[in-house]
Structure formats: structure tokens, C-alpha cells
Image 1 (cartoon, one colour):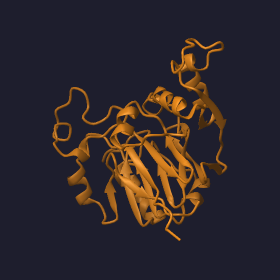
Image 2: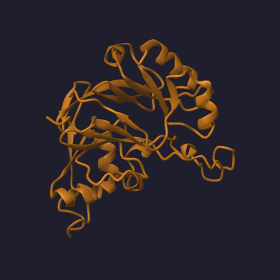
Image 3: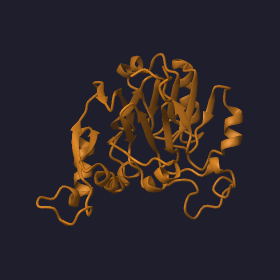
Image 4: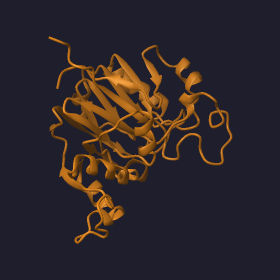
Length: 266
């Protein structure tokens, strides 16, 4: 019997909310020729047994999916409702046409409310524009911190804090994705045990009120001891090569297009 095809978590973007290069900045990182210093807004594609789903829909989503040759998306899951995580949502419109079906959006109530306001035309009744393909076909699936099944795999939401905002990270098999985090509440540590790979927010060296710094994320890595860790949601204050050289051997700054194996369990 042939081995099942390998599946991955693909990091579509690894940059902070303004991206890198940042508009109007000509620092060494923003002007760098190193492609690993070119960071789109954060998002992830997860290759599940029965299709592909996204974690967040960043503003560069179309470009990111074309770059990674991801031709079909079946669903999206959301960490929180900030602009850099939802403002690529209209790019799902093409997938509703390909599938001739509505795309499910898995999120908490505050995210749904913000999406409905920002994309009111997609939920108008009657439709704001009735020609085929004019608006995305979307519907909501409410989630909490309970695990749920999606496209043949189990997704475990993990409660995190982004400043004072409660948000979600997600675990798929033994890979956890925790962006935009400044605190991991006590009740969430158990869900992060036994990881093969941890992808976690590390904005810059200096502390920030709503994001982990490099040192804070290193403390999380030391506590959880995953086999490997990648830092994401990276600002222009961190050069890829210089910063990664200063990190432990099993820790590295992530980069756009990084593919993380998910294993074969569901």
C-alpha cells in the first residue's frame, strides 16, 4: 500500500500588521535583498485529508495563494478580527465559484460580527449584486475552545490573549499556530504539550503591549520544549539571518512560504 501523501501547514505570511518592507521605511531590513525579510501579513494554509483550509485571510491573500500554487480553498478559520487577519476575505469569492458552494468561516462571535460589518455586501438579502460571482458565498460556523472536525482532521482551538483581546490559536496534529499573542492563560498550557512544532508570535526584541517579544517567546519555547519552534508576526526590527543566528538551534524566524510537515494523524 502506498504511503499517504504528506501534508503541511504552509505559512502564507509572517509579517506584522504593516508588513515588511514597511511603506516609507528604508532601514536595512526593509531594503534587504533577502527574500526571508519580505513578509506579508500573517496567514496559514493547512493541507487536510479532505481539502485545504486557511487560518485567517490576510490582505495579500490572493498573491500568497498564487505564489504557493494553492488552487482551491474549502474553508477558513479565524484567530481574531483585526484588519490584517480578515481583509483578504473577498479573495475567497473565486472558491465559491469553483466549488459551486458556500465557504464556511469558523470563528467566534466577535469575529463574525466584524466580518458582517466589513463585508456587508456578502450577506445582504436580497444580494447587493445578483450576477454570478459578484459577491463571495460565505456562511458562519461558530467555534469555542472545543476541538472540532474540519476536512478530515481535528482542529483544537487554544485560548490566547492579544493584549486585552481574547483570541484563538490552533493546534493541528502536533503543530500549533499561535500568532498575535501577549499572554497564554493558565488553562491553555495543557493543549500545547507534546508539540512537534510551535509557531508563535515574536514581534521584536523590545516588549510590546499586545505581542510577545523574542525573549518572551523563547521563555515559552523553554517551558513547552517543542522539537522545533518558528517565530512569526515579525516586524522590520528583526533581520532574518542575524536574529536566527542568535537563537537556539531548534528556533528560527519563520518566513513566507515555509512548509511545516503535519504528519499523518488526524
